[in-house]
Length: 227
Length: 340
Image (cartoon, rainbow over all chains, first blue to last red; front, top):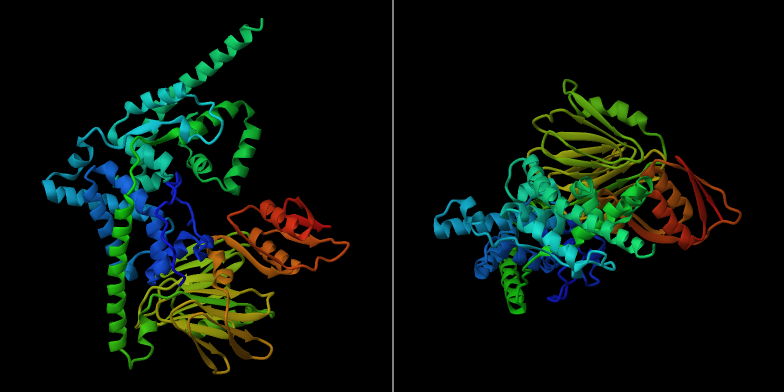
């Protein structure tokens, strides 16, 4: 196997499904194949997985719990676990999904041990988790969505619960499906994830409709000034 | 706007656009021009949302964790190689134990329906219930067998398998192409019958191909071990990265190297061409997309084409190849005409 040069400056890619930046032969492989390679002991598959997901995992872990050292330990444990058990791992199509699910469980278990708290308590007791910001900088196109409009979305997001915010970020930002969100957040049924996300989206939609009205108003004003 | 925000496929188009999503949403906008504003607004809202506080590992932590992980893996690898050494003396212990991917490509130029109808009763006890799964052209499907083995079937394939495997042997019969992920069971070898050739494994992953209109039988092994028998009593063992090519005319097996990407990528919906002639390309596309392609050229296209398409619709693929090879094409439902 070809060894891959580490690239710590890997862009914090929004989709998270980005292919490696270097020219390794993994460019053309599916995640499922890379995972199978990893299970067979390939070092470059391990490199690929770490390089692509270590920072995503760290960010996600820190949203669950802001003890950075604990999150780093959990990430290391997670990788050691999958290396130790690699031969018995199930095949996966989306590596990030597997890693997120495992990391979340690991962090919650560790917190539970540390503090003797029931799981749900730890996860949602602190309001300052999974905070969302709507930023015009993140837009790739010429921003029709001005700062004012982003502020409306921001304001709407503040009305969401921690659990809703986590689900919305997993769904919008990380690009997971409802089914995956349900599994990552340990919700049992896909329906629960759907309901949770639908409710959050309804709040967002109200904000977006306001934006729409504003755009319309602006257009009217603009038209009037020519009359 | 609700419908868009709730639509996973819409989110996919925003975060991770590919030809399929682009194509779909372009059509959608054509059908719903009044939704243009909603569309843009929903798209921008999704793009604008991010973590308020995005964290990254410090470079030193990033390198430190990776160093520890790699050190652990090195130790683990050494431990495993010791186990394999201590077991030496048995038949291929490392290979038997290794998680394996076997690739197995089979192509026939003759009609082999005869073999299928005749052979099944020999190898599977008659009281077992046989299931026949047919995959039409243009489709792919994944099925799970009674022992937990998973089979990915390519377009135009047929798999015949028992509802329950017998206690001492697992046998299936394939026509077409399939990638097998065989559940490990050393007491029950898994045999795949493909016409005159049968392939036996203990617990691995492999690919089989058996189309009526093709010439050779090819078995390509990515890792693990595979035993191939023909009906003349010849036996061939394949090592990883070897491919066996069986000629039905000459009744001989020849070993050679192969390109794993070219042979296995179909199971992940990746269409790969490597120095393919126009005839080879159209043959593959016909099966992949379930279309009929007519080549109507004034002057023949001599060049060979290499390229790769993941999850792309036919027009995107034809655009790509057409651009490189210099042809035009017309699609009329299931019929494609290629012109200069």
